Image 1 (tube, helix red, strand yellow):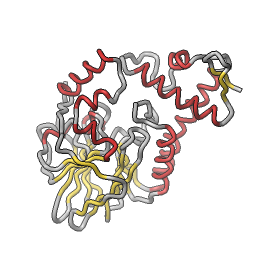
Image 2 (cartoon, helix red, strand yellow; image 1 turned 90 degrees about the horizontal axis):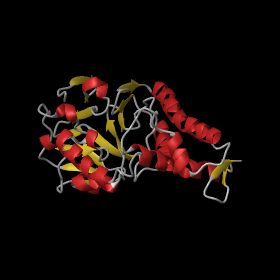
Image 3 (cartoon, one colour; image 1 turned 90 degrees about the vertical axis):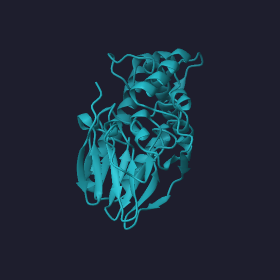
Length: 296
C-alpha cells in the first residue's frame, strides 16, 4: 500500500524530504532548496504525492520512476540532464530504457503509470554539467555523475556545502550499472569525482540519508565502491572453468538467488559483460575461442 508523506530534515538552508522507510525503493528522498527569489525541488518522490511543497521549478537527477513519481504535483519548469531527457519526456521511452522483452516492457509501462504516476512530460528541458540555478542567495550547480544512467547527476548547493549524490547511494547493494544507458567505467569516474568534492553534507536518494563530513563520506564511498571489486573477484572465481556469458549471468553478480522478475537476466547479462570487458583489458580473463571465457 502506498505511503505518502515525508519527514523534513534541515541542513543549513537545505531541506531533505525523507521518504517512507528512510527512502528505500520504491520511495526516495527528495530535496527542497529555498532562495530569496525562487524555490526548487530535486527528485519529487512517491512520498510527495498529495503533500508536495510548492516550488518554482523541479530538477530531476535521472529519469527513473522512483525519482519522478511526485512530478505530477508540479506544473512549472522541469529539467534533467540532456542525456536522460527523452525518458523524462516519454513514458514509453522510460519503459523501453530498461531493455526488457516486449511483454515485460508493456507491463512495465503499466506499472510506471499506475504505481508511480509517471506521465509524459514533453515540456521538460535539458541541462548540462556545470549549469547553475540561482535562487537568490543560494545556488544549485549541476554535477554530471554518469554511470547509473547516461544523464545521472548530482547537485551542489551553496553556500550550504550540500552535495546531493542521488543514486550513488552508498547502500550495501552496491553500484547499479546494469541498464541500457549504464556504464561501469563512467560509474567509476563519477565515484572519483565525488571524492574530489569537499562538502559539509552529502545527501543520498535512499536509505543512507545524509552523511556529514568528507572523511565519513569517503569511508562509506570506499565501501560502496568495493562492491565492484567483489563482483570482479566473484567472476574470476567462477571463471576457473570456461563459461559463456549466459552461464555467467545465471551465476549472478548483482541480485541474490531469491530475486525474480523479467529484469533480472537482462541486468545480470549487461553487468557481466561490462566486468568481462574490464577483466579482459587487465589481462585477467581471455576468450577460449568457442564463445566462452576463462580466468588467465
